[in-house]
Amino acid sequence: MIKVGITGGIGSGKTTFCKEWEKLGAYVLYADDFAKQLMQEDPKLQQKITKVFGDESYDSEGNLNRPYLAKEAFEKGRVEELNELVHPVLWERAEELANKKEQEGVEVFAKEAAILLQNGRPKDLDFVIIVMADQEQRIERTVERDQSGREQVVGRVEKQPDFQSLTHLADFIVLNNGTLEELKSKAHEIFDKLVQAK
Image 1 (cartoon, rainbow, N blue to C red):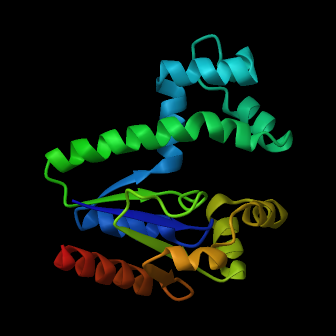
Image 2 (image 1 turned 120 degrees about the vertical axis):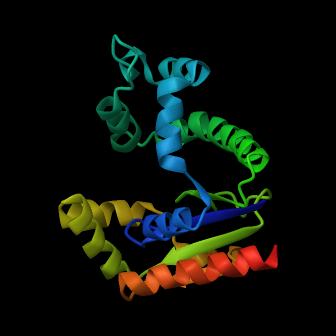
Image 3 (image 1 turned 180 degrees about the vertical axis):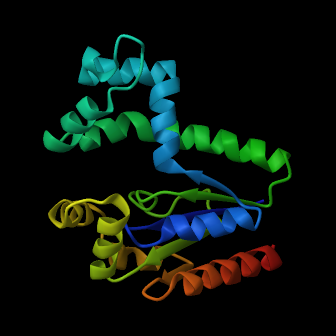
């Protein structure tokens, strides 16, 4: 099985790229969604979050109190604290899932994560792909997609890594300043290349 990391900034088109790969038979793990699922379902992680961020992190029915946690993490500058609790569990469980998918006969396992290259290139990946687009394009796409205010989106973009400075860690750089069809075509091209090289 080939393990691939796919990363890029908000509005770069990495999710669209991944959706094309799913159509081609890849299993894609979306790190953000998986992290939210673990925060909701993993008892040990729930205990740690409650210990660090307080009982308000979960409601009386045990559901994750996302607005409260988002406020604590982002408005009070505690994102790193939350990441330190969630990320080790996230990557450990991702590894377990990859092994399971390999036994099921999956040929390509991809991890989609904005934070993929935060601590350098992960050793467990065979290939890394960065999907990039001009900042203005990314802002416009995100404003349209999320129906958000421009200032809010600019703030989110500025908090993300500078992917331009991480290109040396990638095997493929996908520039997505063109049409949707061009992006889909690039996704197919790279997928075929990796499967053939296997």
